[in-house]
Image (cartoon, rainbow, N blue to C red):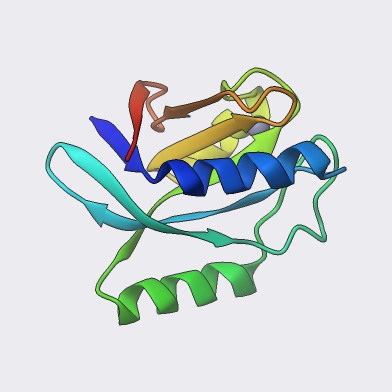
Length: 129
Ligand code: ZN
């Protein structure tokens, strides 16, 4: 399994994350192939309930992201978030992964390093395109 994502999409998140006092999060919208997840674009969620060590995606953002993706024959293939730690799931992230199975793209807001995982905690190769 690979996650294919535009380099520019990752770089935009990193640029915002290093300046943000709180974690950032959103959805990866795209196509689930048999082998690859292809990210077409990023849906950024409202970070106003986030802290420096936690994030929440509001129901309204979830609704809007699903509606927008469906209208384009795409789907939500995963979630991204930034946190000020190595790009691995925290214990809280692991809880979230059970509720939101799929790809979890995690970006270290200190270094810009990133990694992706599924809900079984298997690492997914990220390829920038
Ligand atoms: Zn996290």
